[in-house]
Length: 367
Image (cartoon, rainbow, N blue to C red; front, side, top):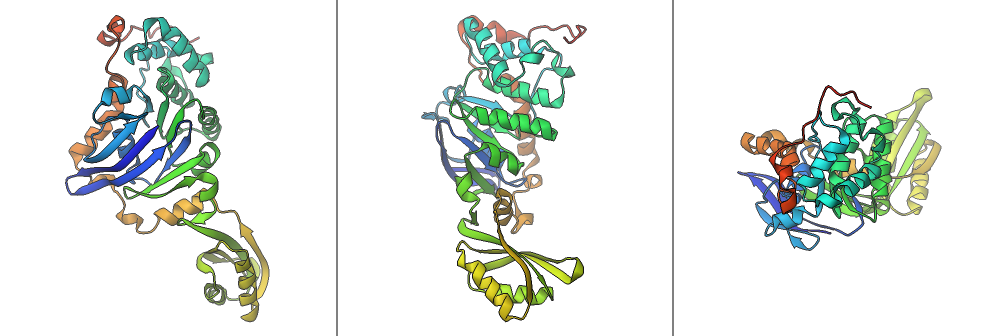
């Protein structure tokens, strides 16, 4: 569904995205991760046609997105981080307007709107004024907007930004339900959300792809290598524990170490993915004359992998402040421009939808 090869975006001497290559297959839900300034939003804007790359190629559903941008954009439903909604309109009329603007034929508009309302689970507020909805409902209306033209590909940029835990869970379940019927590329900072909803993960750092793979297999790695995470609790000098453990064959590093009450110390240890390493750690601690209270393996979370890949030299990452002001303002403007430009061609009988937005009486009460 998505084929990206050596995608690069430069702002003068500053490289925001560097030689990025990846594929997303039909029906997948893929998490697109990275710290702030990693180049995620820049990449999404290039994929959706709002930003022209400096180099590289993009194919959407087999269409060359650079040579045929309008055809490629018809295959995409894009939900930017700041969803551009018309607060004075009612949900159903807004989606009907958006459907017409995206080229949905007049005879199909009602069917598509009803389907989008159902998928996004906003049928209960279809007659409500958008400006009177909660943040969670507004986000779901934005998702319904992305769905209303029934695109095969959904690109969602931080769809749960600003939501409470219950709303995050609702959106996460919704995204997961779209798997198979739609291909989803999900950009987010909420790692448990990716673990729960995405079958595969792409991790971006400083504009480069650092790691990709199935979510289940990535959790078994650290830095792309098979890994074991051990938790040790013992009695004695913390430095002595660190020295004994660090010299053990198969131990890569002590992730963290801190003192506990009662003279105890706790260490978290990253090691090679061999069960025998735990036995070697046990032996090394005993030979050093230290008292071992507890030694167990821990499940490696996506957060552990993400932190290990992206914290080194984080201060030198892709800092948005370093991007020229004119480029940054252009990028920011692209989100709000989405409401008017994400499908600029419409059929002839729907050209009236482009002339003006339907009037809505703001004085009407929300039902």
